[in-house]
Image (cartoon, rainbow, N blue to C red):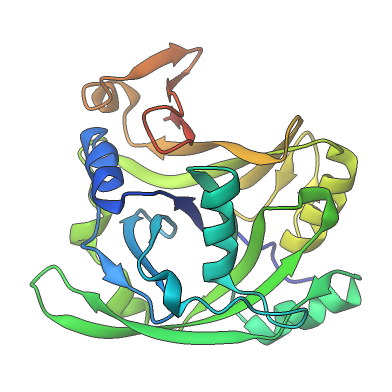
Length: 264
């Protein structure tokens, strides 16, 4: 059996990308320069060790394709999310070694799939130059988590994408270790997430390095957990954090609708 798919990144939808960059930077994260997608959105990334946070805004709504039954529209999903739910985490993205293999696996497991999608953009490097990055995406969805987005991302130029200067953070952030999913029917959501990720269920869904947790409640991604090198050192860069057992928590009102838990 192939290894479970780990967290590649999360998408955090914001109405104001510059303000979001400022808020996350104030908590000790390094944000990449603003980049524009060819389909109407713009982003800034918080790269860690092998996964990242994507801060996203609508750049040009006139360029957004609504998609159809066979084509999932990343941009239209996020436009609808910000219009109906407001700021917050809109999508969970898992790492892919083989995009087409992911689609075949999901079809065999009875998941809904959409046409594969490929795109590229220019990425500003730390030295100010610009280089091409390219991605292959596979989308799925499930009624148990209606309104949230799920896909895998296969990178084609990882050496251009990942940069140590962008992966270094004042708060010592190393990796998104876990994502919490809230659903009115946790059992149905659990079944979908296991098939989506290939993970195994214990008290949570164990991936390869990371995990997914599920709670009962309104459909949302209420919290992520970020692992840091040293919790005490991180606290100096988290003025809004509150202690919670062996972790520090920054409330969702500070970080675009996402509660962030820091652990060592």
